[in-house]
Image 1: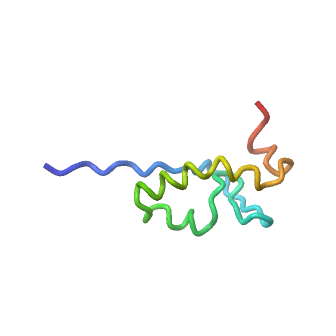
Image 2: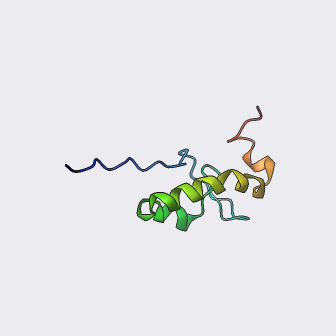
Image 3: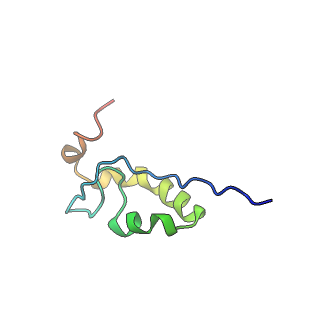
Length: 72
């Protein structure tokens, strides 16, 4: 019996704008190499990266993120 492959979870929010100061996407907070390599990453690599993403939000100036992440 073959196992059905798991869907690849993605942090993509369809807001694809890279902040030039940090090189992070302002939607998903990944770098371009991380976005490009996402489908090739192992499940462990994706989980590790997903755990890192919330901490990256503070690297982008708040006024830039305000439109994408409303207060609340």
